Length: 392
Ligand SMILES: *Cc1c(COP(=O)(O)O)cnc(C)c1O
Image (cartoon, rainbow, N blue to C red):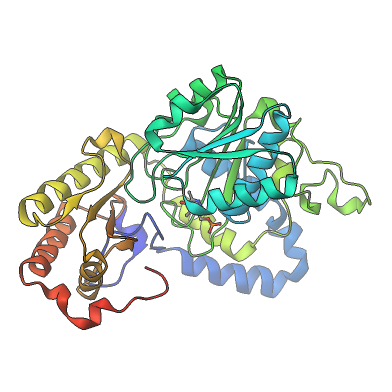
């Protein structure tokens, strides 16, 4: 749908945009001009003259329509783990009389680690209750202060029903936090429609902001002015340059800013967001389903050794498909050596992401043909494919 907007190496079929999006074609020029013309020429004047200081809010406003959020409700900055911490801290303060944070074991470990760390710091006796994904709805009770979930499971792409679970949580009086890391930029999302109090996500996966690109946080506008930010840094202050010794939060979501924004990363992200102009999320989603269905059909026909781990119903999964195989790690290394790039998650899961911005049916068919060859000839048995790297 936007193949010309990206630079991909010759001969590579990139099925890992769910982990790190590829390089937008305009990013290098943008980075160069931000470095040379803004940093190089304007120096510190660029905070005012090049609009650096407003970037977190301006980029938030560009992400907002992609997740169904109103203008002014999304702020960009920090990493996703930090945004999870901020959201959970603020959410818990909204329910001081309750003592359970409910999440599931399909959540990304960092989200659970951040929750663990925060609960220790708070010192209040709050339980982190981690249940199976299918048991979440039944575990929402009157003790639950916060329901904290990731919409798409990072391993299998299994989707939670965000609208239903948010409703369920609200009926029980709980606050909700949705992590959109694996859905923002992959499918339509309606944070406003489902009324969640908080949503967070990252921009280096489907949004193609580049390695280390900052995260985003959404706070529902009707409560944004009353939340108490736990990471009360100077740029979330009402008047950072008054240099008051006491903290006063900035209006609304602006208070979720912490410190100095990573300007170079934000410049690249700004360019990456141009790709979405005029694109329908529903069209993108429909194309992604077409591609993943084609992939599943062909893999199951040609590689019966592999076991589908993702939901078979495309409406129940995000934009990725996972297959399990005992030697999945080795198979993935053999694929990567042949230009088909996916990734691997322990213990045995091969992940393939489908991003119709730069993938088409021809790519999928070629990828499956290469996979079939690797399985038929047992190419993965070559010792070089067994060596484990730090990042899998
Ligand atoms: C990718 C991902 C993260 C990563 O967090 P960072 O702080 O950006 O490294 C966290 N949570 C989820 C659900 C993710 O998918």
